[in-house]
Amino acid sequence: MDNDSLKKIISHSKEYGFIFPSSEIYEGLNAIYDYAHNGALLKNNIREYWWRSMVQLNENIVGIDSAIFMHPKTWAASGHVDAFNDPLIDNKDSKKRYRADVLIEEFIEKLKSKIQKEVQKAEKRFKEKFDKVQFLNTSPKILEITNQINELKSRMISAFEKDDLVEVKKIIDDMEIKCPISGTCNWTEVRQFNLMFSTKLGASEESSMDLYLRPETAQGIFLNYLNVQKTSRMKIPFGIAQTGKAFRNEIVARQFIFRMREFEQMEMQFFIKPGTQENWFNHWKDKRLSWHLNLGIDPSLFRYHDHDKLAHYADAACDIEFNFPFGFKELEGIHSRTDFDLKSHEELSGKKIQYFDPELDKNYTPYVLETSIGLDRMFLAIISNSFKVETLEDGSTRNVMSIPKQIAPNKLAVLPLLKKDGLPEYARKVMNEFSHKINLVYDEKDAIGRRYRRQDAIGTPYCITIDHDSLKNETVTIRDRDSMKQDRVKIEEVKKFLNSKIDISIWLKKLSW
Ligand code: GAP
Image (cartoon, rainbow, N blue to C red; front, side, top):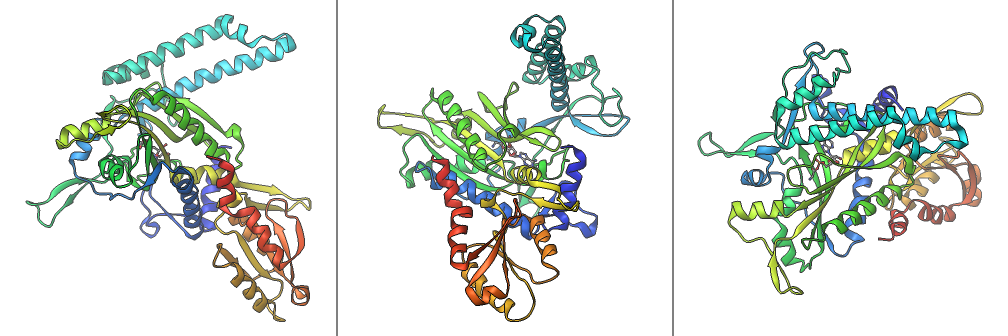
């Protein structure tokens, strides 16, 4: 996969009603997108898969849906007013803006791939005699690169910890990191830029209050923590989950829906006893990865990335990365957030937000383990993994979206072979059998082959075709999107078949949480 395939995915998404650029008739808005019919269906299905796995399958996780607007003190307490900044740097020749930490991290990735190349070369040369561990520990070239990586990492961490932007710039200069567009090292200074959008609440200038659009949904959970704990009578450990919009004035917004200014998060805060965070961190790392793999996506497309540079609230953090068309990038974050948020809210609000532990017979501020995934980013992972241009036996090509069947936008297309002889009426009757249960498409236009292609392009797992025999013996042909195999079955069988293949509860059961 490369950027060319991303371009194809973007144009396919528009042509087949998944995603439109927002406000297109006014030339659009950078990094803002609208979801079209098929996109909205797919997004709902991903959200449902997340919600039901987290809330329905875990009796100690409850859901909420908090407001986007929150008291402005929230963001002072959470640290977002002071610390939700990106360190930005501009290249004077290309006029492109970058996040300084990302430039350095990408440089480190390049050094790592140099090691990988050296290993591959040596493997070829020494064949079965090759000892990888020995090679990594003794090859002078590898040792030099490994040292460079380690030094660079510790310089970067220390510079960010001290908020020393002059040192960050010096690292970029010392490493001669180049702008990917202009290829030059002609950089500006590094400076911090706060990512929150602000707005006003109230009718008049004098009485209005400055508000922020929430940059994460998590704070709505923290502010409701006591209410939820009391009303749902939860005992620690327990979790609160929610999905909803978040807003960030991303400067380096690109790569389609990967980094947007308005996006949706699916977050869960798990409240735990202090000191148990390491166990729960590993527990949720495993659980969340198994959630992704349960969709049947190739496991080699996922990897963990433990953070060296931690956010202001975390004592450990790990990303689940996905191999997007532009390489491995963060899809989901698992963060050990300590008691930072609850304690800060306690201090600033003056209200006690503690938990009475009946087993220990004492009060404490719980620690928090967070899982946080971008719904739009998950959407991109799904469509970029599903979109294929296949060459068929007869030399023709088809565009197919092999979206995991349980979350496909439409589950079934009903296609009368002809627009006459009672076939459309019969097809409508068949539709009525299913339309209360699943999303369906009815299509009677064009030759049947073209109709199949249209359904392949929007990822519909099954098409049933109604022909003259259907009227005689209540049978239809059912065609599988991926194998393109067609089977003749009784209409009664279709129901059972669909239940066994696409009902989301089967996939939830497979999770065995
Ligand atoms: N509450 C923690 C938090 O917000 P984060 O790593 O900043 O952590 C969590 O964001 C997830 O939200 C990311 O892993 C990503 O999937 C998604 N996300 C963050 N910024 C995004 C953006 N600008 N556009 C789309 N998704 C984004």
